[in-house]
Image (cartoon, one colour):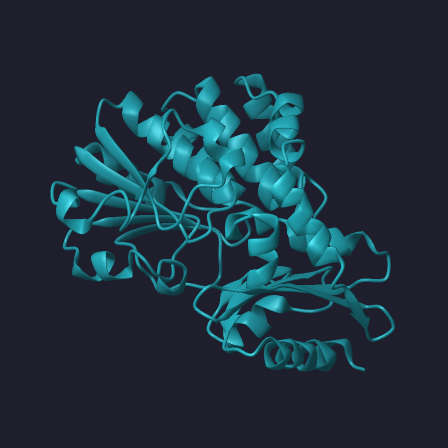
Length: 329
């Protein structure tokens, strides 16, 4: 847990700023989007200008969190148009590897940076950092911060933070779902979050294209080491054939974790530039963060990711070898 001195410094940064940019990591997930939306709404209540910017496209199923879709850096907005910014807030991220589109802007920026994050992987990007690696989601840190600052938790903020926490706990299925998670979510429900409505919006809204892409991925399932390691992959031709996009792959990796014997899982996605994006999950015995960091990525012990050079078969073998070391086969 963070101490009040850190929260005081963070609140001070926001109070003395008038034009604030809020952003997060590439391929934003529920925690990232929820934290972004909550911080933007909170800053607006202070009558300050806030500009939400994403490094990559917002997934359609998180659009309901925002009054207007955030701009995508480099496509909808450029560094030249951000000259009036006097504070940058990074949520759910603290490493350049997760900010490829915005990295140059950050390095050239002379304005203060506030980081709100719960990952161990860090480049220390903030002048003030609210980092709590014990938090199951960045949304928990944002909630604690807003409560410290005594800023109102509106219905929109409560909804956004509930999404953030629910997403990073697998809708309360993952082992990081502790009593802090449930207490915080109870507060958010009291503040106006509607869990049933949120669940339907997030998980009962697949487009036909996304569902077909998931089916294509499942057809590639391979099990290794007495069915303890599951791997799947998606190639560019799969996206072309189904009409789905890269952002449609969010949470796909969790599908194979329904298999009772699976202790570790990996999903390999061929990107347009040829690189292989590898997302990994673990039930606990395998430390996938350690594997990801070895290849320039990062994340958590039980959820991490990295990029690998092609070809796909080499990338698959690389990760399989690392998984084998930890499973002790």
